[in-house]
Image 1 (spheres, one colour):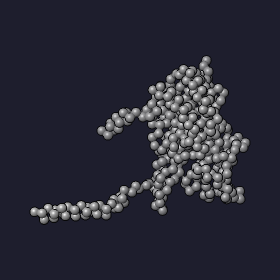
Image 2: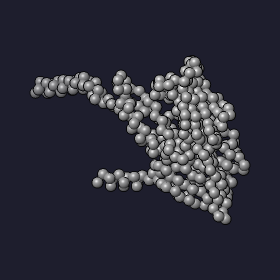
Image 3: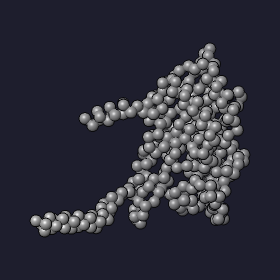
Image 4: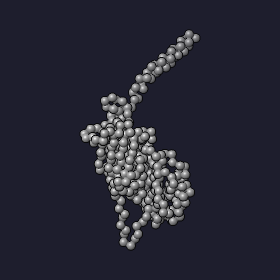
Length: 348
């Protein structure tokens, strides 16, 4: 009897060891099947452009993204920049591009040594910010170090407007940027037509309401809420839920004078009008941002918070969030409605 029990125990141990050994041998094979295949770059870029166009038009700004893909020839994984320009009336257009080699001769019919994309954001009162981004081999150079390889010269209405890679909140008839690659002397010059701002005609017997503040959220490559809230000096406030919000469309309400006064007090205390126009001062891939524009007490300023903004700015952002919440406007989708909609679509 003891021998039978002993033999059973030994058999069980052998089976357990064999099972462990078999699992170890077959584990690497399982990993091979877990690999995620990427789209070829041509297909991935076409898909991303189509997807991002609605977001670019909804926000009236350039949407840029680095799309993971696979090179069709080398089969290597890479990341290609995709830039989609808005088609709204408040967007700028490139009217002419001139490419010159190191000798100053225009290059005709040849591939340029590098390319330049214009990233644009709208500002308050019909103004626009423009950022010249250098592209090389289908990839953008957004970091500060790479920008030092190039020189930038901006001209607004034929007058010099700085040597940074961007100009902020301009309102002009024409703009021009010359980008020079320092190592070779090759240049690309882009001529840009900014949007023309026309002050709306006042209705009979009623003055034109002035915008005192704008608070808006921009999107990302995903489902980030996109909305804009405009505050007028007469107390009116207008909400526009553009994408991925629980309150889509346009809503209006009236606020008391104390609300604007409170916004002004907080802005003064945190030195809003002395803050930089953008945090950080370089482009960040696929990141949502918060934009605040204020036109209060004769002072006008706009700040875009992407990453690394001063903590004091968060206090002003929270104040706007609280005002929106009090009106019953939902900045995020209603989860119950989303579930009901998903369940209905699954039944069909």
